[in-house]
Image (cartoon, rainbow, N blue to C red; front, top):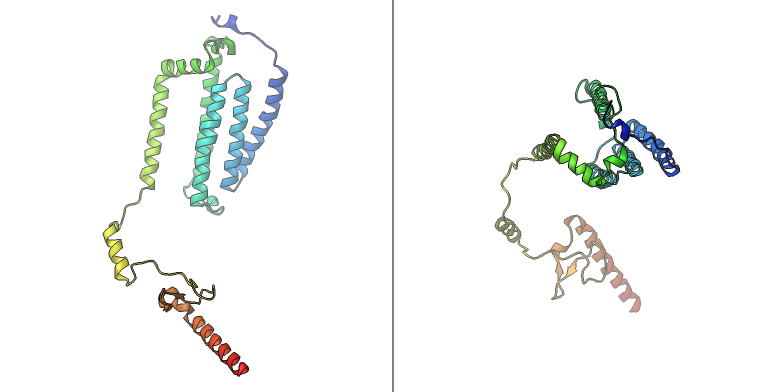
Length: 264
């Protein structure tokens, strides 16, 4: 007989807990299925966010506020948002996800998923059932006797310290590996400030070029800017727009000539 068997209390599920489960449970299951079936990476990430938020609600209903806060702050607010930012910056084409670059990766992922599910079920069974087949769980009241956060911290830094440190080492290794894979070697030397200044002064115009149409009688991009002395700045108009500028000048001169002839 397990020494904790007498501490097990069969309590009826409250109405609020039942409502929370029947709201977040189907929502998380539907979002998980849609995440797997979605062909768009951004849509899959959003469905994953729905799954994580639903799990946070279930954790809160099971008197585990620390796990609920970690689920929202760390997984949904940090890791998933970082993943979305990477997708938005890099961009992922939907057709790229259909190309299988590694042979047999789907079969390997299915086998690894089954192994992980078996490992997870074995871990839960070892925590709930004793070696002789009796129930070894003490219930939430006994587990949260010192508080949810204190109880988790005591287990992490005493009984599961080695597993906790190994997990942190794996996360650090993954971050360093991502930095190494994303690093690109510079093929050309970095341009110094002296070289940038030399290139700018060698172009003949050390100052910034005037914008087209500045201080002119029109806001057209084909109109040259006027310098302080009233002359036109030839570098203010692109060479491709020079014919347009010349046509505008000819049209203005012809219009002025016609107006003079009419007045005379």
